[in-house]
Length: 53
Image (cartoon, rainbow, N blue to C red):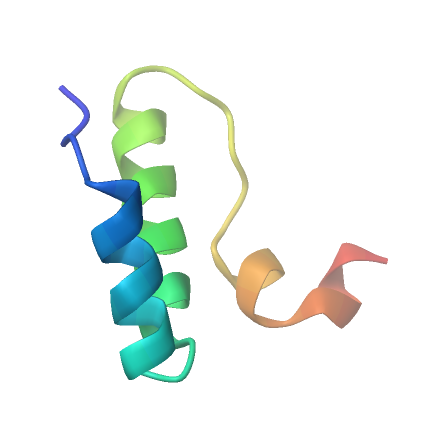
């Protein structure tokens, strides 16, 4: 199952950690969705935008 997260707490943590938590949150959410059957590519596409080209 996908873990329920409070959107306000996610926003606060992103601000406090200067965006690092945002990257970790995206990777964790991507992994949870892949476990449920989604076809989302590697997290490097999130971290290094030039790979999206």
